[in-house]
Length: 242
Image (cartoon, rainbow, N blue to C red; front, side):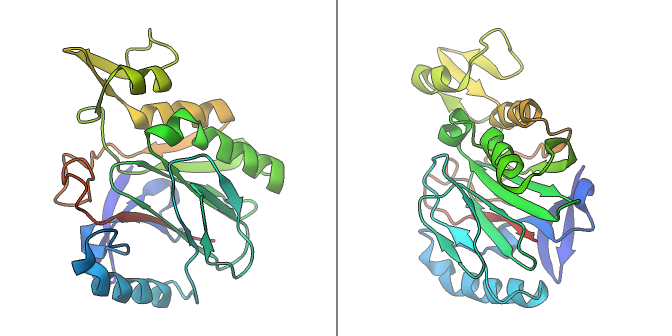
């Protein structure tokens, strides 16, 4: 179950599956990445310093997200990765951060090995099965059992608002008989990206998954929405401290 929490005066979103862990999704009240909202640049800089201070980290590791399926195992003290849409780490005190504004944010954590990951699953990343591949990489590279991983699927655009045409539909929907994944209206398709990623995680062997029901487009007063704000928006973030 997801719930809002006060993080030293800043509104964040957490899951009861990892309520004692330093991992959460930010809101408009705690913006960390301005994107093309240059008016928020100073606020973001202050909030990043605030985040590092409160989580006792010297640096934040982030990436240039490109809607692909490149997944990186984080190296010690490296703070930026180009062309990367998922990051995995087992290095203590590493603070991972990725940014979102309708795309599906996924946080993965294994309590046994104390390893974590964040994946950025827009529709292209979802079509490329980045959620499934991130779990596979955690298993292959760090010897983590998928059934010991806890997954949080955070706030993103919902089936209610993710309207697409035939081209995107064909890339996302393999089983056209599975009507829980989409709805067809007036030759347009409304697709449930969160459910597709949930199914990918299940296919990869993850058993404990918490899916946030909030739609960022419907709730653009709390989260940033690229679609609702026509691209002129900042980003909310997924954060996990290893």
